[in-house]
Structures are given as structure tokens and as C-alpha cells.
Image (tube, rainbow, N blue to C red):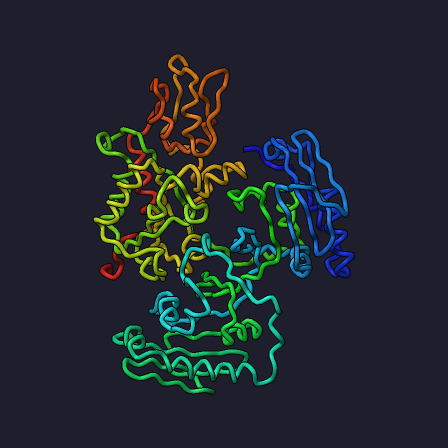
Length: 556
């Protein structure tokens, strides 16, 4: 893969404290004049066709015209029929980025399919007792939460932004939080009797609240609801702390908002997604990943003001995953498809199995494959998943194997591995080494395919070392047999195969070895060369070294 040239960020010398109009003009000026280097190899890879890009930086207009061999721009004007329009609507977001904020934004689309880059602003942090798992399993039972935070626990890749009131939330008045909290405590007790029994009979719950110094508790006993203002209850299952009074007011007032869950420092954090940058795509099916091709966007992540924090605790948990070849006879797998044997191994061991709809196919409204042929999650940590209606279910081993067979029959490419971000950022479940993820990727919607198409990175979906073929295996082309029919090029989901002097060719360092090209070659010119007959067993052993899917309650 071609590497970008190393140089200081073009934004590093901007004074983030400039007045809004002056700062927005300077920010746009640098984007237009300094962000693009036509001689950079990444430019040649990313702009093999022309792209028109319009900018609105807090009211300041301009455009960029990316062409294969040249770049041009202008101030104060928009291009007709742009491919992308970037609208920065929050000057404070620009200030934070210029100060060196490297926090990862949340991406979401609205009902008009406009992409929004959102700043994550904390709503609450949930503190649980040490022996209790995911706090989502508790708060999802409270009807008040379900009204405000829709689809709690659903994958953040597919949740569309809800429409929100245009008027900003008014500043919090003295005594307002206490009044709203009291109203919430009273209203919660008015839930229908049948709903109360469904949520709490056999599973009582204690919750403490802490909002800007206002405290209270709720005790959901099996047959009776109690609460008290100004006091916390001992041995609470969950303690909810709200650091931001504006968002607390929004929540308690039942004003619609866009919320999502993630794990931060081993605690459940529910945050509000505040749109700060809107991107309008001409191509409705373009991936959000496409914005990463524009140099100015990646440049912002290079800004670093002040000293680096060297003693900050780093996450040392290992991510690893790989695509599993669909057509490879080797070792003990001569007569059975490799993906089936690998998945069967973990399914038979798994303490818990969750099948959920495919977020990628949901997002892109896949026309080729059902969204039901989605992800599979295994292990004790999956017991802490909240499964919104219609998004997934706890499956038997028989259901999981049937799911696998259907996915393989449709030609989907299996991917298996551990991805901490999938659990903690996507579903708000702490990954303690007992969360194994499996995907079945199509050639039109898969996020890793989108990376290959828009960002030139193959195998990015699972994280870790999942580029290239499995160690101990190579893929070769017999040029005497190859007739240059291009069927393998059409079948490659990652756009990696090309014709070289009329013969099929692929970069062996980037080919992930899924094996789809083998299945379609009419001349059997493509083959796997297996140097290590135990490579599949070693892959399984590698997975088991970083993920434990067995029932740990039975282990000493």
C-alpha cells in the first residue's frame, strides 16, 4: 500500500482563538490552498476520476475541483452538481480540532441520507456493582429510558439520526433539574401493572440518581415501586451520574435526542450525538468512508498542540481477525468447507450465541442478500448485549449452524475475529476477552469492501492483522491456463484483481485469500498453494489465545 508523505499538519499554526468569521475564513483558505499535493501518490490513487467538492465553513463558501492530473479551487463560489458538499456548522468543533482533539467522532445519517459527523457529548455514566454485567440490561427495563433512547444496544452503524427540535435547549434555571427529576420519579411509578410485572417480577432492581448535586433513588421491588429524593440507597445495582445539565434537562424533559452507548474505562457511557459537520453525497450509495479520501479531513487528525501524554494507560487488548477461505482443501478439512469447520468449532464451544441482522446490508439497503444473514457473536460477554426488537436474538447451536449454511450457500465471505471496538463502541458491551465476532460479507455492502473501494485499504473490517492471505498459504495463477476472461476480476469483492498483460494478477500482500476467484475461474487457472497443512488449526489456536467462548461460570 502506498504511504502518504510525512509532514507537519497544515493546520498546526492556526490560532484557534481567532474570532469566528476570521477563523472560518482562514480555515477555508488553508483547506483550499494547502491541503492538496498532486504529486503525492495517494492523490493519484484516490482521484482517478474527477470530483467536485463544495465547502460551507460557518457561512464561508469555496470549492475544490479534483482531477486526475490537476487540482483547482476558488473562494466565494459553489460548483454546480457537486459530488460532495461539506458544511461545517459549529465553529467550536473546529476550535477543538485545531487544539489537538483526537477524539473519534460518531457518524450517522438522517432521513434525507445526509451524513453527519457528530461530536460525542456525555449524557450519563452508569456505575454498577462489581459482580453485575452491562448496565444496559438494567436501564432498558425502565420505560422512561426507552421513550428517550430508542434502540438502546443496537449497532451504531445503522441507527439513523432522529429529527430534533430546531430551537436550542434553554439554559437550566435554578431548581429546574430537581423539579424535572421529581416528575420523572413520579411518572415512572405510573407504568401499567402488567408492564411492571413483566420488567421486575423475579428481577428486582435498585437505581441511584445523581444530577448536578440532586440525588434520589428508585427501588423496583417485585410487587412495589419506591423512591426517595435527597437520598441514595445502599447496595444499588446501578448508579447514574449526569455530568452535563443541558443534556440532563433534555433527557428529563423527554426532548428527542440522538443517543448511543459505549464502554469508557469499563463503565457504560451513554452519549449525545451533536452534529457538527454535514456531508451531502451526490451518490446516495457512497460510503461514509469516502470522505477519508480528501486530504484536509485526515490532516485535522495530525494537529497536536502541547506536550504528548506519555504515561496514559493504553488498551493492550489484542484485536485479530481474518477472512476464511471458501474453497481450500487442506489437512483435516479435505472434504468439508473450511468456513463451516472453523465456525462449527467455536459454535459448539460457545456459552452463548447471538445472531443479529447485518448492519452493513441494512445501511446500504442491500438488493442481493437478506439483512437476516448478518453477524454472529459468541461467548459470555454476549450475555450482556441488549437486543432491540427486530435486530437480533439469542440462538441455539442448530440455528447458528443453519445461519452459517445459508450464508455460505449465498456466496458470502466469512470473517471471524476479535474486535474490541465492535463490542464496546458498537454495542456498548465490555469486552473481557469473551466476545467473538463473525461476519458474512457481500461484495456490495461490507465495510471492509467499502474501505477497499474508497480508502484503498483491504481487510479493515475486523482490525488487527487481517490483510494478506493466512500465513502458510499463497494464491497463484497459471498463466498458461488463464484466458483473461475477467470473471475473477468481477468476483473479487475488494477490487484487487486486475489484468496484467492479459493475465489475471493480484498483489499477494493485499489479497485476503477469500477464494471467490477460484470458484468462478472456468479454466481452473487460479489455485491455493498450501505450504502449511496446519494453517487452519493454527488460525483456530490463535483465536482461542485471545478469545474464550466457553462458559466461564463452570471454570475454577
